[in-house]
Image (tube, rainbow, N blue to C red; front, side, top):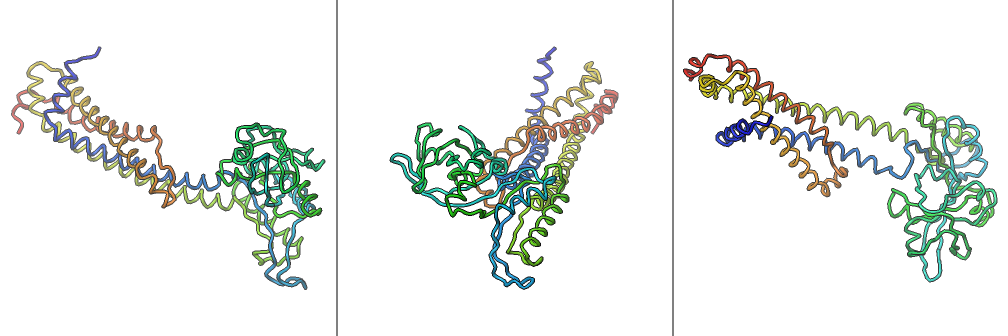
Length: 409
């Protein structure tokens, strides 16, 4: 049953001893404030890493070609390395157990027009697997499929901003768009978390682009994703082996870094994972240190409060208060002050993070935030510590005889 008299007495005690209450609360609020800011900054840094590769598969490998910089086996430096369909087939077949998805790419720029609307866009000619490498989200229609590849269909999938530019509010599916003089049918539209640039791209079947733009089997790039069951070290070894075999296939020196370049996300992810792990441990140590400092502070204050109220305890016992009632008053007062101060510290920490969020982007910290459950757990820890720190001396003081308590100086 709710005891209004007890709570009135508690709040009267808090109001009467404002300085003591403020000092107790400040210790808790400051600890929670620092705790919130530290973990918020750590989460903001993790958000930056996540957003940097938000539109690419985490297990992606990008294979690009260039020119040789070193003479090798009688071949001169400066030789252009050009990938072909056979190289795509070789990688797909030779490394099949380790590959999840694979696609080639061809890049082109076109002028796209529909009715009275016209603009310039980039075209990527790809295989059907490309959808999964780019995390493309089809919102209307479908993506490029194998039939498009086999039949060399003049089918395209347009980004959401292309749809808005050319079709306004009209449904684009089934309509024909003129790309630099050639009509293509829109079979799908998509969104991409990579931002506006990724949504201004038009996708078409790679075989169609090869027939129309050069009538050859050249490709500009080959991308793939490795088996997600691989750990970082296995994925890195796979990338090294892939680069080694491709250099051998094209007669490229092992130390030639420009002829064939294999960018493996596993190396990037491993480095980021190691750095965030170290950062997380560091933040955890600092956060725990902050909490311990808060626990020590609130404990010392609670011991002082109980000592200060020894005479009051003696009067209560003389008037018939039980030891349990005396202890409960002190503990509830401690919990009220600690909980209120913890919530104030949480609000202040979240407020500071939101206020500083735009400026923190300069330091590669994006949308810093902290889990409410984590901060609540930290606050509960301080509450428990404060309650325990108050309980021991309060229990001891409640067992003192009234005459002894009243004589206490």
